[in-house]
Amino acid sequence: MRGLKIGCTSMRMPPAGSRALMRLLTHSWEGRTALPLSIPARRALVRSARGRPGWILECAALAADPRYGLDGQLRVNLLALDAEMHLRAVEVQC
Image (tube, rainbow, N blue to C red; front, side, top):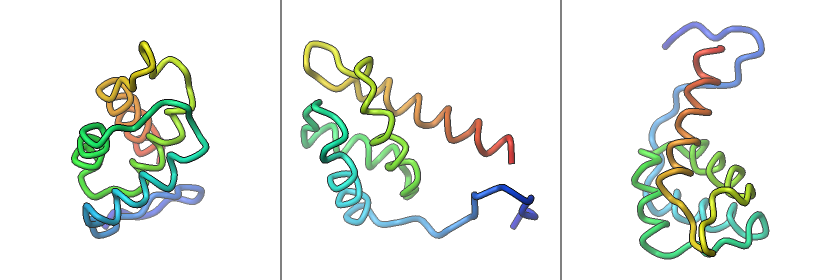
């Protein structure tokens, strides 16, 4: 495990299961955005998370931005890409 730097909040954790990530996504999505989250979108986001609960929380936080909606539908690919880029940028800073 890499040495942790002061102020860095990331730690390597074992991957979370799909069911736990699905529950986390459902719970964190409620009340944050008016965009509907269809079953295929949920599955795509959980698959993209690759066991990382922080990634799911980042997606839910980013989804509050209206630019991730197009004609009332969630732009899953854009949301997933932005969440990945944001978390990687944070990881590089640590």
